[in-house]
Image (cartoon, helix red, strand yellow):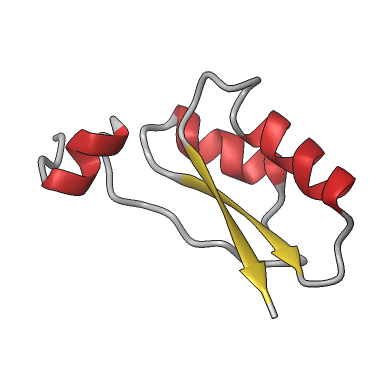
Length: 74
């Protein structure tokens, strides 16, 4: 069953799932959630370098094909 709401329609999601967890949820989990119709979120820490955040985002989004988010923990 697909949930229809303004946010899911805008982001092209079939399920409203997304929760970043720095240190636990990285790019592979984020990508799997996005591939399943949710909003995959990768968690990063405030001291993580930009290169790491960029590589997490690239894999999580399947090279820009899937919706995803980045949760930055302070």
